[in-house]
Length: 164
Image (cartoon, rainbow, N blue to C red; front, side, top):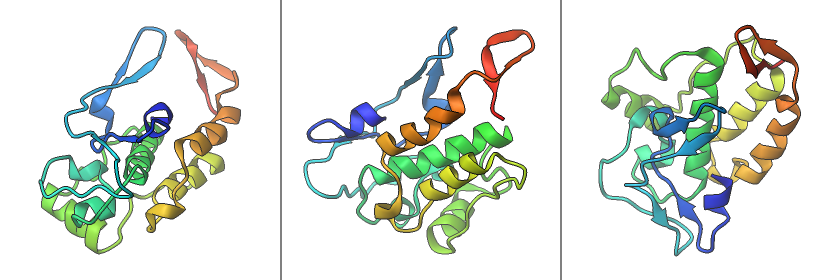
């Protein structure tokens, strides 16, 4: 995502979600399904279509307001939440209820209290109400770097480590 957002003009995915992430045998993640992506030729993108998956969409997108690459950052925060909780986002709501809750009532997924504080802070930053307050992917990568140092290998998965 950092690569896409650093292009000139930036490429905004607009449908970033866990089902659009492919993982190979070496745990390299590739983003796929660029059907909704757009070049950001101006400051903001606007979409008058109902395309996308509400569970991962930023509030401004759900309200059909202009958006930019910071909407992808919000979606990435939902993916981090999924990885941390091993749950599907908003599984108790239908898509229309998600639009109402996130887009109009400012609701966010509950972050577990026992989650690593750095990860919890990063998720919260990705979910900032004002898109301009959300971090860039370059900043996200810097935040995650200390958390990716080898710690405890998972049994049966020598290439995967637990975050401490």
